[in-house]
Length: 397
Image (cartoon, rainbow, N blue to C red):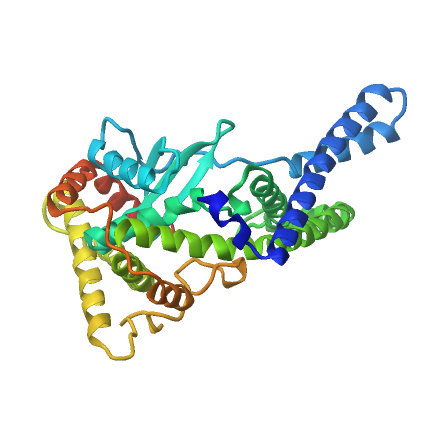
């Protein structure tokens, strides 16, 4: 499919993508050079003091710019093929229809989203399935959401590639570490004013910050450069990201039907309302408690969330302005919850328009009620763990 669509890519996008590859390559070459140069100064100049210190700084800069690969979240429930054969069969069927490699691992999360990525050195395929979205969507819209996300593997989004993707992750990770260091330094000596050592801690904090100002200024310049490089790389890859999003929508329409793909985009407006309801239920469970066994409480939690999502969808369909109650946003206008408008992803309204004006497709992969119920049974234990995690996260916040 990529070969057939290659001539359709505008020249400006090709040029921008080539520049993105160049910037990413230079970043990785710079990281390797910093590491090798720093190690050389440390090992070969042990008779002096200045060169090893410079070498140490270069090595630390290389560590900040190191490529970062996604990995499995140890806090999320992981589903193996043996535990959820029906779910994996559905995912395999969608992947085969899209012509992409099959998934290796599936994890469940509490986010109203579906995310497919590659993790580890071997770049194995991972799908993070947000159960609130899975619970809120009708069966065929679930297929559309899965196909839309897996369709990114078939599209030519350079942000998903190993070279540019790792460069973006390295820049974001380095900038985040520097910001975290600044916050930690400011909070290192925070203490209660009622503490018997409050005065001593205040004096120590002043001295610590005074000595740390030089280091902060030294880190400020690399941090600024990393943020600038990240913005540059994000800007260069924005045209590719937009086109890849449209291609993924078209793939979802071919697999799940155009109607299901459009409805799935509409119902992503449920994200804020469902999230608010989950938080409310978690607070209620901690404040007042629920009657019954722990297992019934966990099941009751998701039942209430599903009922609320259904009522939100019915209200949105019955209104003339398409506003989802509890959200306040038109169903076609605002981007999905958690989506950055500056990220290059087109707004939902534009995506719906393109799908509606294009060729109407029938479904090639369907999810009937019997198979959907079987998948729900396979997710039973993971649903219970997720419900408890929502309540625990609410307490920690």
